[in-house]
Amino acid sequence: MGLIWKLSHSTYPFGTIKGDGAEYEVLSTESRALNSDEIYQDLAESLELAISKLNQNVNETSRFFLIHWEPLTSTLTLSVTDDQRENDSRVVVRCLFTVLEKQIQESRYESDSKQQTAQVEFSEDLHFWCKEFLSTDQGFSQFSLIALFTDSTRDRAVIL
Image 1 (cartoon, helix red, strand yellow):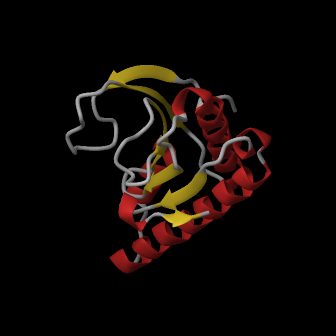
Image 2: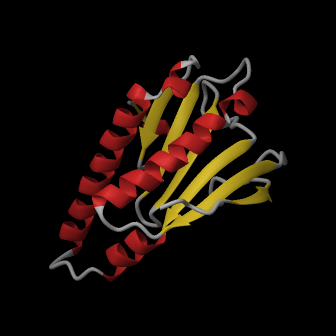
Image 3: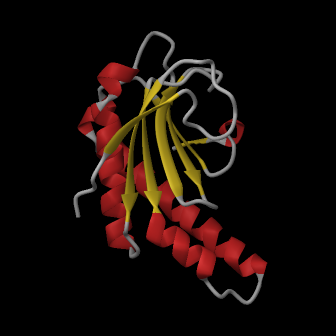
């Protein structure tokens, strides 16, 4: 498919929480993927880009490769962070799955619980795909980072 990446700068690219004033480079894209194969392809491209930036991002305090999935906005954010998950790498990769988000928002589920179940199931698929990709990636294995995945808060991230 080939995603188109845009570079922007932000003082805190991880939501509405105030940052430390440092400037981050955010490489972002929008995915139009909807089926599993296309989603995996765009996920893999996002992971490859983040891994290609590890030489720039890893320093003496780096511990985790954080994969943060935001189910409500269908946004994937990839960064390197420290032991406390507070100090992030200066280069961040973000992929917004726009068509998937629209489908989830417009879906006609019989109830909110069925919509939540669908979101949980997709998060589980994404978790599995990330684990599968990173376990075989030669570039990632060259670094002593622990891969974490969360679809909630950083404190609730789990090891892949």
